[in-house]
Length: 272
Image (cartoon, rainbow, N blue to C red; front, side, top):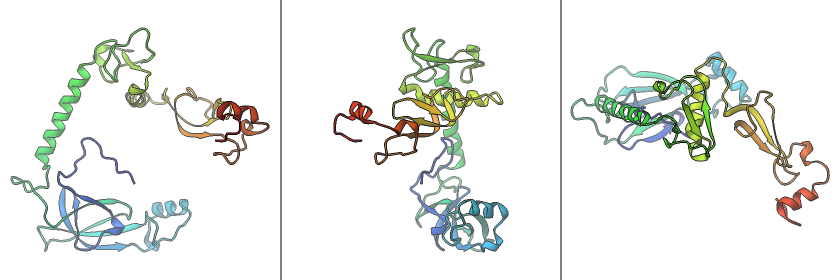
C-alpha cells in the first residue's frame, strides 16, 4: 500500500510505525490530531448497522466476507494519554485506514507539549518552503522552460500553453513554455493538469482518459474519439501480442500469419 503525503502535511519528526485499524490492539499509542492517544477498544460494526454508502461499496466489491473485508466499518475508542480519566473519544472509519503508532517512550516539544514538530515549528517550515517556491518561480526568465528553467532554443521541441501564465502571470498570456524532453515531462504534466482545471470543460493536452492499444504492427489506437494524441499519457494501456506471448485480445493485429513480423522484431526462431 502506498501512503502519499503532501509536502505541507504534518508528520511526526520521530519514528512512527504504520498500522491499519484492523491490526490495532488495546494499549497501543496512536496519533490523532497531532496528539498521542491510547487505544481503549477496537470494535467491529455489525453489517446490519452499515450505512447505505458502505453497503453499496461492499456490493460493488462482490459481497466479500464482511469479517475480512478490508473496508468494513470499524469503531476505534481512544483516550488522551495524559488524561486517563477523560471521556474516551469514539472514531468510526474503514478498517483499512492506516494509523501512526508510537512507542511508550516518545518525544514532546519542551515549550508547548505537542508532538514535534509542534504547530509553531511546522508553520515556520511551511513559510520557508513557500518562500523557496516563490523564489524559484521568480527565477523563470521569459522564453525559458518552466520546468528546468533553461532557455528554449529554436532547435528544441517545446510546447507553449495559451492563456494566462499560471506560474508567472506577470510574464503575460501564452508565456508558459515547456521542453518536450523526458526530463521536463513531470513539470509539463503537472502544469497541463492545472491549465485544464483553470477553464471549465477544457481538456488536457497531454493526457487522455481513453484506452490505448499498442498493436502488433507498432500502430496505436485509442477508444476516446477526442484523444489529443496517441503519444500522450493515457489512463489505460495494453500491448497486443500473439497468444501465449502476453496480452491477448483477439485484435486484428495478432490474427493471420505473423511470421514476417516475428522475424523482423525477434529474429528467426526467436519468440517474445
